[in-house]
Amino acid sequence: LIFKRKIRVVASLYMNRDATMIILSLFPLLFSLGISVSDAFLVGPLQRPVQISRRPTEALKLMRRQREKAPSVPVASMTTDTEEISPSAMAVAFDSINRCRYACTRFRRHAEPKKEPAQITAIAKEGKNKAIAEPTASESDKIVIRQVLHCLNIARRAPSGFNSQPYRLLMVSSVHAKEALAKCCHGRNADRVRDSDCTVLFLADREWGRDWTRFGKFLDARNEGNPIGKWMKRKIQMLVLLFSSGYPLPRFLSAPISFLVRSIIGFMGAITRRRLLVPTLSSAETWSTKNTMLVAMSYMLAATSRGLATCPMEGVWVPGIKRALGIPRRYAIPLIVSTGTPYHTPTTDLDEADD
Image (tube, rainbow, N blue to C red; front, side):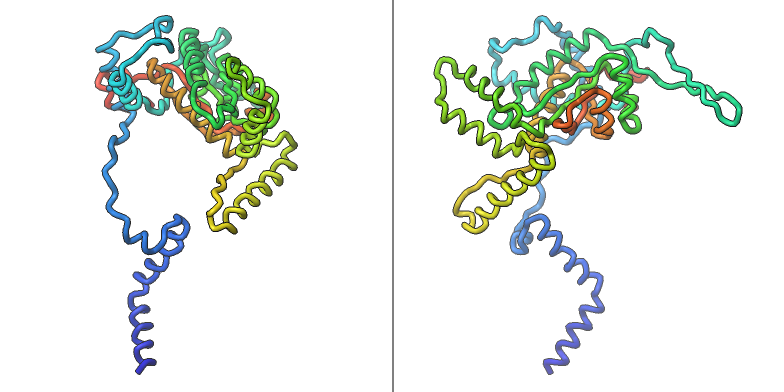
C-alpha cells in the first residue's frame, strides 16, 4: 500500500512537472535573496511608490514652466551658507529639483572650434584617397563653466565616511581634452562629451592610506579651538584605514591583505554567532565608490537647480581615459557626468524627446 502511494505521488509530480519545476526553482532564488521560506509567504503586497519617475519630456515641460514663473538668478546672488531658509521652502525646492532632474541625451553645442569644423583625414585604400570627416568637440560656454565650478564646490559638502573624502573631481572643458575623452567613450556617449560644455570625472581613491598625513593635518586644523589628542587622532586614522582597505601598498599586495582582513573579521562574527558585532567591510574600490556616488548625486542636483542639464555615463574605456588625461592608477572612474545646455527641438509642445 505504501509502495502504491509513492507511485501515485511520483506520477502526480510527473503529470504536473511544469509546476513542480517552477516551485523548485523558487528555492535557490529565495536563498540568493536571503529570504527564508517562511518569510517568503509573509511578504505582503508591494506598496505604491510615492513618486513615479518622470519622462525626460515631462521634466523639460516642468523646467520650462518654472522658468516662466521665476526669473533666472545670477551666480553672484546665489544663496550663501549664512542665509536662513525656512524648512517649508527647502522642502518645496528639493522636491522641485528632483522632479526636474533627468538624464539629458543630447546637448546644444555652444560654438564651433576656431579651427576647421571638421578634420579631414585621407586614407589610401586601393589606390584611391577617401576623405572621412571626423567630428570635433565644441567650445565651452564660460558662464556654464563658472556655474559648474560653483556646483562642484557645493558638492564637496556631501557626506563621506569619517569625512575622509576619498575622491577627486576632474573637470574636462577644453576642446582637445574633450576630444581625447570622447575617443574613449562608447556609442553616443562620445557625442555627449563633444557637444556638452564640460564633463566631470569622478575619481574614487583606492589607496586612501597615501593621504594619511594629509588627513591628520585636516583633523588638527578642524579642531584648532579644541584639539584632539594624539591617540584619538591615530584611532580615527586607523578606523578609516580599516574600513577603506586602502593600504598604501602596490595592488598585488594590498588586495590580498584586504581580503585577509575582511575574512578574519567576518569569521570572528560567524564563530561568535553575531554576539560580537563586527562591521561589514568591503574592498577598497567599493568603499571609495560608495562615497564618490554621494558627491556625484549632490553635483547633479546642484546643476539642475541652476538650469543645467546633466547626463551620468559609465560606458567608457577607463584605461584609455587614464592614459589620455594622465590619471594615476590608484584612482577608479566609476562615473562621468556631462553637463551643459539641453538641446530642445523646434516644437513648442515638447512632445518629442530631447534626442
